[in-house]
Image (cartoon, rainbow, N blue to C red; front, top):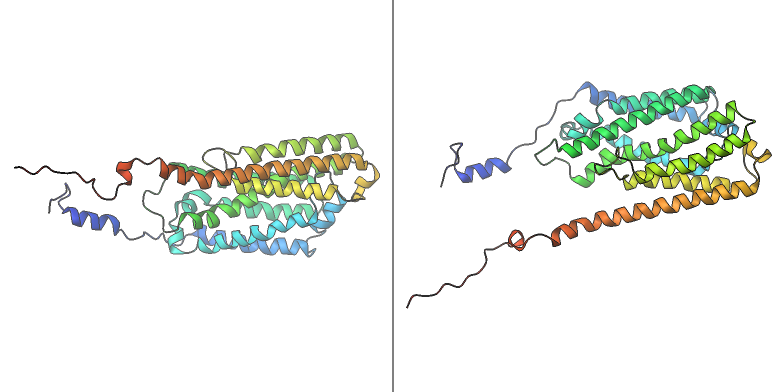
Length: 327
């Protein structure tokens, strides 16, 4: 057999090319800190709902009811968020996942920062420090944005030329979806927290609260359509957009209640609440249509790529040619 420039036969070269063993990264402090941060954040979040640190989130939300506060059932999204982030916290401890570029060069310590900021928000909101809670909320949003932005850069630069030990769908579920869900909900929660500030410090400025609610519903639609932190193309990831659609639906259901909750019942006419409820429902349907369209396009893209392949590349066997026989 012919030799390659490296002095080995072509058959040996083919064997060594596809027989490279996976390189497993050693356990680092980052891996341990990520797992500990998840466990600590889970305990603190549970404790906040039990009233360990003061008023619960439900009590505070009712106290500072806004025109963009989602209905209580919408907060059930924290279940999938914690389940998926718990799965990530566990799998990133495994040898083959420690070498995953998205873990080592993407998530890095950003998730630890997310958990630390979220714990700070929990304490601040329970102690009625609304201004401080807004600061922590912005820190959570920034840390999640930086985390997902780093994952996008890793995907764009293709830092791993060799096949990953984890398949692509599993990598998306465990490495991207936890933080896309979290980022989407925190995007909506940041808007709500800003409105809570107005309710606390400008409780009599009803026209200002109404204007802020209208602006919030309009502005919250934009990242659901375009968010370069979620995909390399710049279009918002469908999962991220779906979370915002869920938040809009929660707002719609809350405003459709009669009577309104909290202080809103004393000044907000039902006509205004119904109008905002319809707007929130429209936003939810619009984003859901965008999500379904992008999912459908994503499913069709591989089929289109397959159909446009040249016949030469698709041919498995060499073409048949007739050879004339010499007489």
